[in-house]
Image (cartoon, rainbow, N blue to C red; front, side):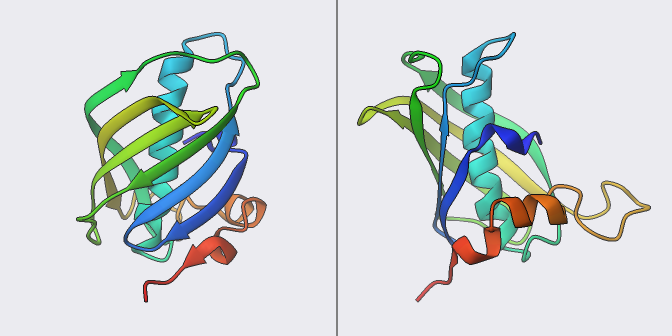
Length: 145
């Protein structure tokens, strides 16, 4: 995953919801594709919490996605991903992207948590140390009550 699509991790409510922020990126290809990736990356934070960020992630399937509009470049985005049925191997998530208090994108997708994507590595390649430190992931994790 190209984690630089997210600007900030706001919160990760273990087993429930993750919230991030970003902005409409400038890219040589469709912003709509990047919106789906932003929702998946936000959901990945939630799935990663199930294994204490020790496993890697595979973006397995998109069941549906709707993008109503693409705001101007640089527009702030609020991204949420949630699930009611996460397990240690991942699960189905739903995501939304909001701009100026309007939902502009929605998706339902499957993320899988796996071990051994890179057999020579002993740590997660998805949640590497630089990523964890850059976004202060552990500090944003809210444990269930």
